[in-house]
Length: 95
Image 1 (cartoon, rainbow, N blue to C red):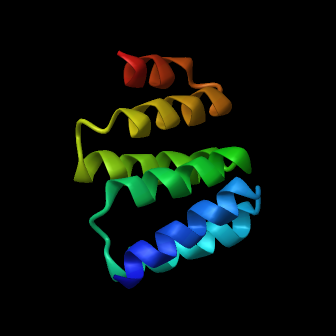
Image 2: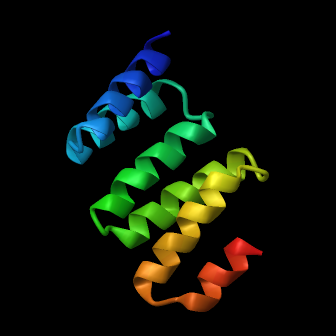
């Protein structure tokens, strides 16, 4: 499936620290299949690396909407809240 292929390519770009290329691949994957929490969480991690805290929070929230038990999304969202200086928001996600 093309969505999985794009996510896999995105993962390779992430490993090479090419976060912009990874984001493009994850976005293409999501345009084909909007229901994969891991793709949102992976794209959020790229935004975290780029210090785009608000966009990371948005992607993590999408992942949590899809899978409310997805721990990585809560953890990554907590990191983004911390980046914004919102320690209450971070703590809430870590509980």
